[in-house]
Length: 107
Image (tube, rainbow, N blue to C red):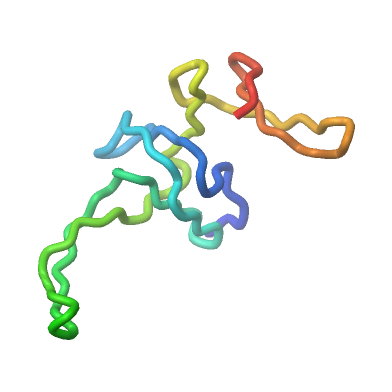
C-alpha cells in the first residue's frame, strides 16, 4: 500500500536508520510519494552495466543511487547531530515551518 505524503522533501538532510547503509547521512535528491521512496545522495549505491548506445556515449559499469523506502530515513538536525522527529509550527503570516522536537530549532 503506497502512501501519498512523505515526511521528507527534496533537499532535506536525512540519516538512514536501518538497513545496510544505517548511519549514513545524505541529501534527498528525489522523492517518489506514490511509491513511498526517496533517493538519498551516497546511499544504496547499485551497479549498472550500461550498453554503449553510440560512439559518443560509451558503455561501462556505472555506480548510482537507487531508491529506498522513506520509512528508513529520519530528518537530520545539525544542532542535535542526529536523526530527529519534527513538528510543524504555523507562523502569524500563515507560513508553516518544521522544527526539531528535541531542540526546537528550525529545520
